[in-house]
Image (cartoon, rainbow, N blue to C red; front, side, top):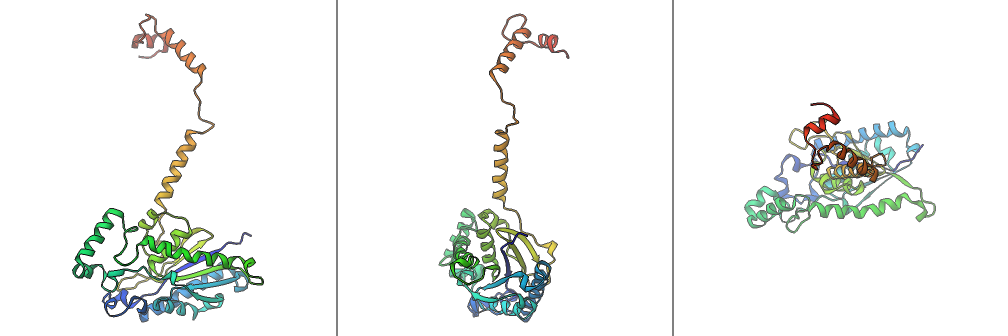
Length: 309
C-alpha cells in the first residue's frame, strides 16, 4: 500500500475572547486562556482524533511516528494539553512549539479590534478600509501588523523543518515523521493549507476560518477536508456537523483548468484541419451554384443545387 504523509490541523478551543471580545482590552492576545467549555472542546477533539487514527491505522505501531506542532499562545497550548489527556495522546510521540504558527498580528488594532479602532484611530482605520476595498482582505496589511499574505509567508517557514523531519537520511538512526498534528489559529490554519497545498489567494478569500477545535486533514499535498466539525465560535459554542462545514474549491485553479481544457480542445488531434483541397472543392461548388456568373449566389440558385426552400 502507498504510504502517505498526513497532516491534521486543529484550531484551538473556545477562548474567553470568543465569548467576550472585551477580553482583548485587558489581556494580551497570546495570554488569552480557554473557557471551561473550551477545555472540554479540546478533549472532544482528542477523542475524535483517536477515532480517526483507529479507523486509519488500527494501532499506534502501524501509524508510525506522529509529531504535534503547537502555537505558543496560551489557548493553543491548553488545547494541545486537552488533546493529550485523551486516548489521542497514545498516538503522539512528541510535542514541539513554533512561533511561525501564532495568530495574525493585528498591529495597531490589537486589543481594541476593528470596531474600537474606528474611534481610537480614525485615520488608520479609514486607510485600512480603503486598502481592503482596493487590494482585497488578503493583501491589505494591518497598521503596524500583518496582512494575510504576511501570515502565509511566515507559516511557510515551518515547512522546511516538517520536510526535514520526514527525511531520516539527514540524521543517521532517526525515524521518519510521517504524521503531523498542527494546533493553531483560524487565519494561520487557512494560510498553512493555502501554502502547503499550493492554492491561490482567491482560495483564501472564499474560505472561512475553521470552527473551534475542528479538524482538517491533508494527505501529502491534497486537502481532504474536515474530519471533525468542531464548535461554533459564537456565544452558544454548539457542535458543528460535518455536513455544515466545507472547504471550497480554488476558483483560480478551476479557471486555470478550464483554460487548459480549452487549449487542449483547440489543439486536439481529433479536430478537423481545413486543407487546400477543401478550399478547391468549395470554389468548385461555388462556380457550379453561380450559374449566371455574377459572383454571388441567390437563394433560387442555391435551392436548385441544394434543394429545400
